Length: 236
Image 1 (tube, helix red, strand yellow):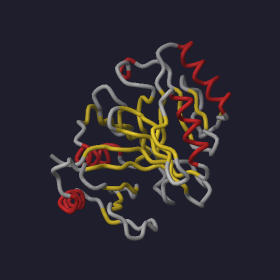
Image 2 (cartoon, one colour):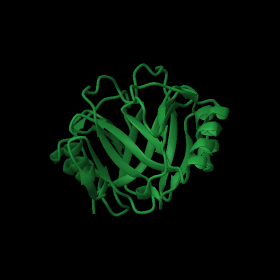
Image 3 (cartoon, one colour):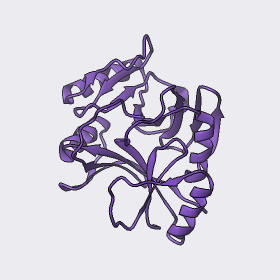
């Protein structure tokens, strides 16, 4: 058994404020809160984690959350609630679409989706979406990294499905990654797994070592084939 998806990590100027925003919006509990890390439950075994960084957001994020809705009325209520909590509408070139694009209080883009049948059995987050120059190739890499199956793939998008939890999806863009991502994924080996072995396995699939200023840490920072940083945590 290889690594599995563990956390979605968000860089933040104010982790406590941003964590509370997302906890309120998703109606999910804060399970840990300090100046160094705020954890909000997403699904069983997976947290939305906010960590402090000194750098301000400078470009559109390459990873974002899509929020689930169950009806047009629910979608409208989610948008209204997000704006009450401090979100604002943003234009990222989406044009006329049935979903609503907003940014959280630190400018991180997210979408409130119209009801979609494929997300009917998941929680408040429908998907974590990744910009990709080659969605199918990147989905294949992340299938190896998470153990999740590819359930659809094409030139414009590809999807990995989690049972009863958010999907991992890849959407084609023309722009290559330019700066360190402010949102990244953590993967983890099983409790009886081995960190060095899993790192070697991921490197064989196209990952490379990455230096984001982490210093001496017990986990390993890699970048996927399109340069998106992610962490391989110690077995658990």
